[in-house]
Image 1: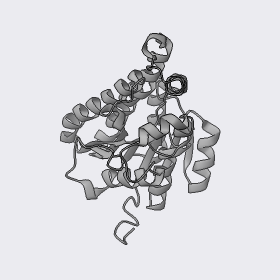
Image 2 (image 1 turned 135 degrees about the vertical axis):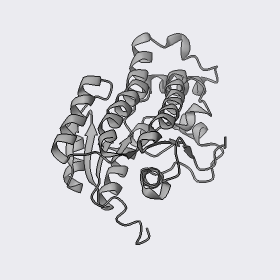
Image 3 (image 1 turned 45 degrees about the horizontal axis):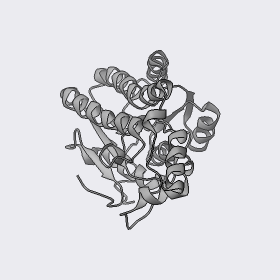
Image 4 (image 1 turned 90 degrees about the vertical axis):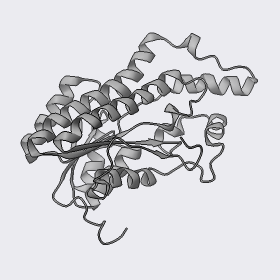
Length: 263
């Protein structure tokens, strides 16, 4: 990190969702290291508090699928700190049951059969967190940032929106929708000085990825010379998009997948 980068977020207030672990935690730590006051948000409040305590931040237990809870979160942060300058929305879920079906099919040498066994509650929960949660965060972030004249929002999509994994239709569709939602909002709110961009990771070595069976992990990682990315590598991309260095970047979907494919 260069000297110019070391305090890119000095005096700014950042809010990071999904920040109890993985990509969100790495982004929260980097933002704090570069000068931001960080609000660490996660459904797992105790784990969020551990991260917050380590960086001098503030922890909040919030389910992003709950619009009232998200609204109350932003009201609390704005009341405490007077502003929100940076939002990183890393909260999201996958489906370990579907991953299990994919694994079983690979072990037996049979075609993958997830769709016919996919129940409505699972479909809805994946979209409630990944898509609806992104909408809730974007809406409240914009409402909070407009009065102060701007801000930067980074959402986390997925390379799975482009290079879809067989047997993962609910996850892929939720993340493709996150990309479209973020880009549409980006065009709208840039007029208020608010930049919205998206990072689309490939496989990342997080707790979520650890639940992926090894045979599926290998298939997901085919074509990359670099293997699974680290959460810290993703946080570098996130913090770039959130910083003034990306002042002319609006509505981008930044692939961070080790060259597995290009778009």
